[in-house]
Image (cartoon, rainbow, N blue to C red; front, side, top):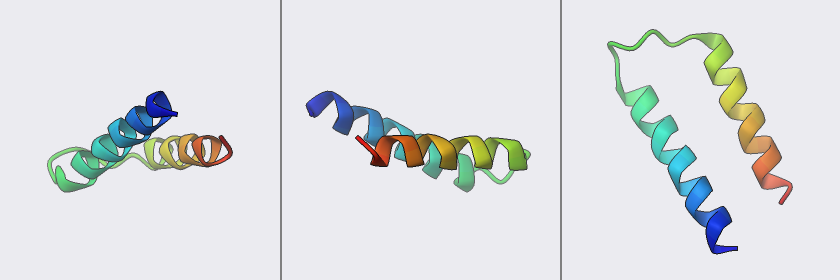
Length: 44
């Protein structure tokens, strides 16, 4: 359970920094990959 929380926190932190970084090219593929990953985690 704790491990899962840590993974989710890491992913949310990554997404947060990803969207805050305006210099980074926001590839739609990356966004899709992240949302797919979140969908998988929610099923835990």
